Image 1 (cartoon, rainbow, N blue to C red):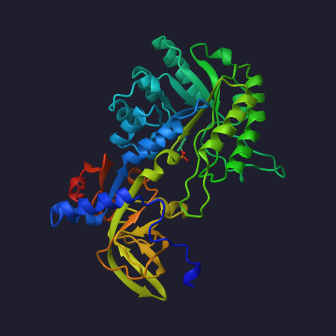
Image 2 (image 1 turned 45 degrees about the horizontal axis):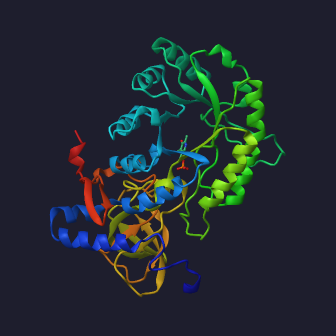
Image 3 (image 1 turned 90 degrees about the vertical axis):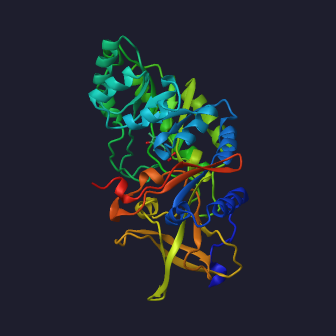
Length: 420
Ligand SMILES: *Cc1c(COP(=O)(O)O)cnc(C)c1O
């Protein structure tokens, strides 16, 4: 049995510098109120690693890179991305305010999202945003009107949603209709010349998630080129920009699969040439920031129940909801060293709902009450995606690790902070 367990006590995602910093941090805090708060759960972002990783992503001249802010809107994360030359994709006023507050100029920001109201479009233009991914005919009209009132000419990419006929080889693996963008048929009803206040020069498509195979990713992108080029021709638009969204995967399930960035760059150079565009854009979320992040919480109880080994943790989906809504756990390790053989544990959080489960994962069999556990790949879709209010637990603190030092960016807060 044990031989079949996918387990390494010190997996690759758990960097030695992070463990060292955690140990020092625990030492410094010993017996303080902060140490008690940390036991409930906190996030730690390794900005030293992030900096190196982003520098590697920027070392190419094929792709213009944007950061999908929803993946992690923490100030210091945005600052690190900005310093490394990333641009920013925002989908709400809150995200825009946060990015501008980090001294990022509005000309490095684009606005995507199906919920752009007339009011929001005006407000974004007034704040200097000049690049929009438009997702409906209303958005197009409202943007054209607001731009002509303000005498500016924003750049516009139309967001396209493709479907494949029944029986045809479907590269997307399903034809779910989403609110993201419009079909080619719907876009074909417009004339670019009817929107003189807009510079409509690009198309955007993004209908896949967490891709882990270079071959499959290339195949998928390849199949987008023909329908997009014919749409551009029908609309009589000069296609200068192709935006292929995000969806580059990280190996949550620790299968050993992963994308090679060099190969992505080579694939996209081909796509760019085939599409004949001068700019190719990606908005990365998890591929940019997942690996730099950690979530640490501790064991509150351990029991055996109907042959299941159960750990009840101080923090669960109140801090980290993604495993419950995707069935992909974040990988876990025990911070303390142990040579005990691994056992599968059901990892439950503190909320009184069966939804609150962070996965069934292998941990050293001697894991005990009060042991801290560390989850990896938690730099994306962690803190802001979760459900922190349910059952009135503590809001998790966020720390960064920079130049080997841990710094608290936001302290933990008790429920009294938001309850009225
Ligand atoms: C969420 C999102 C992304 C980022 O997705 P990842 O899979 O995390 O890379 C990119 N573009 C748009 C429009 C998104 O909504």
